[in-house]
Length: 554
Image 1: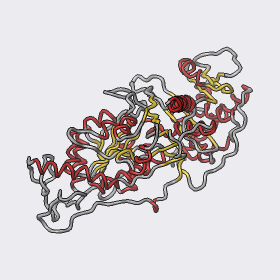
Image 2: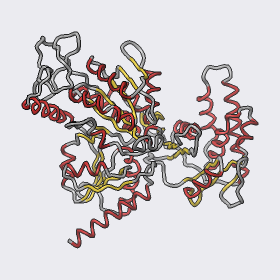
Image 3: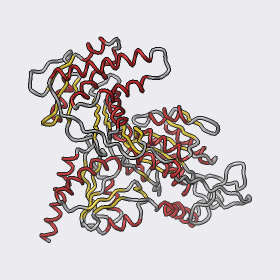
Image 4: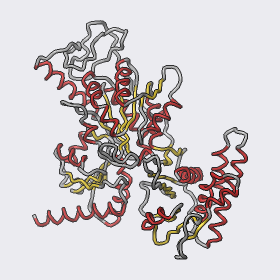
C-alpha cells in the first residue's frame, strides 16, 4: 500500500508535479486497517487534502471506512475479488490480484491500481513507464522481466479504467518548480541534515516512528571517524552520546515518546555536565505505548523540561519535510554553540511523508563546530556566564564532567553560592541561541494564528482560505520553540489573542506561550491524524468571531 502511493508520488515529481504522501497503519503484528494517500498538484502542497478524488478499496472495510471522504465528483475503485458494489454511478470494480497474476508477477497489484488511477486523470502513461524503468533497473539478472511485468500491469489497470467510462478530467501539464527537486521523507531529511552538519556518531534503538533514521545511518554513516550502532535500549543510546560528546564528537540519536522518557536521567546529566548532543523525538500518540503509528504533538512539555530539577532544554520543531533538513543542521549548531543537549521534535506525519523539495545547496549551509580549549592545565571549565571552550580528553584542560553540582573546575560541591552560580550559568547559556528566524504576515491584526511543528501545513492552507474570505487574522510560525526569538515573543505579547492549532489534549504550546505572557488559546485535536483544512478553518473563524464580539461588548 505504502509503495503504491510513493510510486505515484515519485512518478509525478519526476514529471514536474508537486507531490506529497501520507500514510497511516496499525502497529499490531497481525495487521489491521492500513491506508496511504498521494496528493499531486501543479502548485506547492501544504497538506494531505480534505477530500479524495479517487478511493482505492482493497476490501469492504476500507470502502466503508473511507466512503465519507470521497468528494462529490470522486471515483471509487474497488477490488471485485473481495466484494461487490451495486452500480452507484461513481464506482467500478477490478479483479486486482487476478490481473497482477496474469503478468507473471504476483506483486504487481499496486501497478495495476496505479495504471487505473493515472488513467482517471489522463496522466500520460509514459510518466509511470519511466518510473518503473528507473525503479527496477538495479543491475540484476531479472530486472528486465520485472520491468516488463510491471509495465504490463500498468497497461491492464489503464484498460480497466478506460472500459469503466469514468474520468476526472485531465490533470494540467506540470509547472516544474525552479531548480533541482528531490523526493524525500521527513526522517530521511533529518538524516541528510545530520550528515550536512558533520555528524560523527549515531547510536539508536529501534522504535516507531524513528526506526528509519537508525536504518539510514547504518547504511550511510560510514568511513573513517564515523560510527553508527544499534544498542539494546534508549538508556544505552543516551549514555553512549554522553561519552561521544565528552570526547569531542558530534553525536545524535532518535527515538519516540516512550524512549525519550527513558532518556530523561541522561539528559539531566548532559545539561549538568554541559555535553553537546542532538536527540530527535519523532512524536507519536501517547502516553505509554499509546498509538505507535499515529501522529501527535503531545511531547512538548517533556521535551522542554525533561529530567528533574531546574532544566530547560532547547527545542527545534520543523513544520515541513524541507524544514526537517535545516532544523537538524541548526540543532547541531545549537548543541555545539551552547554545549548541551538540543531536542529536535518531529512527528509521525512528517517522518513518513514523502514530498518533493528543493535540493539543499550544501555550499550555503552554515555549520558550526565546537570551541576547543587549547591552553594549559588548571582550566576552569565551568567558569563565567557563557559557554567556555571545551577540553578534549587527553589534551590540556583536564576537568571532571560532573553530574553532581560542581565548582568551575568540576569538583563536587554543595555550597549554596556555587549552586546559584552554576544554575544561573546553565540558564544564561540559552541566550546564545536567540538567533532563530520566524514567519510573520498581517502583523497589524490584533488576533493571530500560530501553529507549531507538522500542523504548519494544514494551518497554512486554513489561513489562506480565511484570507480569501476576508477574516482579520495575522500569522506567525517558527521552528525555534525554545528559546523563542526575542522579537517574536515581544510581538506575540502585544496580541489580543494568539490561536494555536496543535495535536494534543492539553494545548501544550498554548500553555507554554501563556507562561511567557502571551494571551494564547489552543485549538486541539487528538485523533492520531492531522487536521483537515476545512474543519480547522471553521474552528479558527469561530474563535476569531467570538473574540471580536467580546471586544465589541466590552
